[in-house]
Image 1 (cartoon, helix red, strand yellow):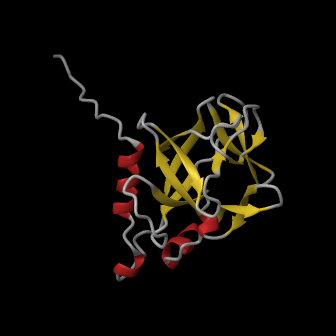
Image 2 (image 1 turned 45 degrees about the vertical axis):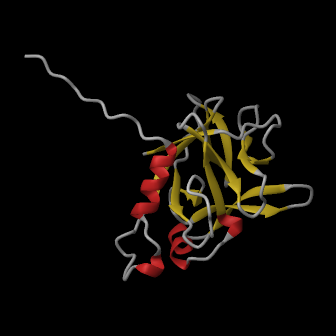
Image 3 (image 1 turned 90 degrees about the vertical axis):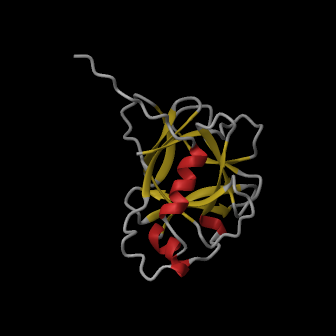
Length: 186
């Protein structure tokens, strides 16, 4: 007896983001958000096959296959950020524990990424712009990659160094840094 396995096509990043926004309604419009106890988890890695790993409270881009444990990111939509585009998705990203989030801060010459002690679900439920915690997910034409623009610093994108085991940062597109990522729901 021959069995056929029907393979579901992989969703594009835009479809995954639309699902995320559908699953997490605007907290202002709902009676309770208790049922939304957990953010969605995503694997993220750059075009050079470096994934994010936590080292001394800093996210670094480590080569796949290295001994560094992969950090899965917790993600929820930012419903308080005004967005006029149906193809750009404002999101909060944090560590899997849900108690630390990525933040964009100004430190002199250029903005930097920092990990801040803040509950990702608390940010979601407050329905405020929170630009320093917000990243604009831009799905790329390939449908399987995207970039993450800082809402606090327009034109600056989450990036990794071309060298392994370096901290993630923010950079302008077109430079030596890698600003395009694979972003897959776990």
